[in-house]
Image (cartoon, rainbow, N blue to C red):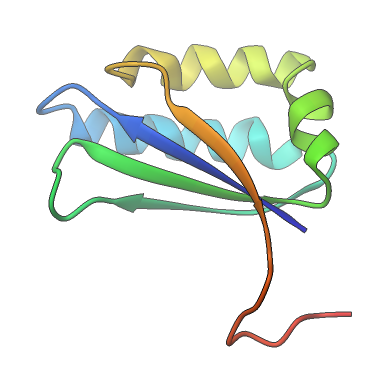
Length: 104
């Protein structure tokens, strides 16, 4: 399992619109992509216009190839990109250890 972490900055005052758009985009496009497992969106407490988007994928390629090279990615971008103050910083992580039991 791979965790995609996207650090997103939005324009000041666009919280309600962004949160509605990202929910719509996640449910109607990203969640349909092969290899998608789950998502979370978290708003930063210290920096009001910053969010983290956390997405679990089966493999790195499910995101970097399967999703990003699909029509779903274009649909996703059309929904959420208008709310980005700048391009998100995206990185991928693999689990080393956790307090949550791993599913085998």
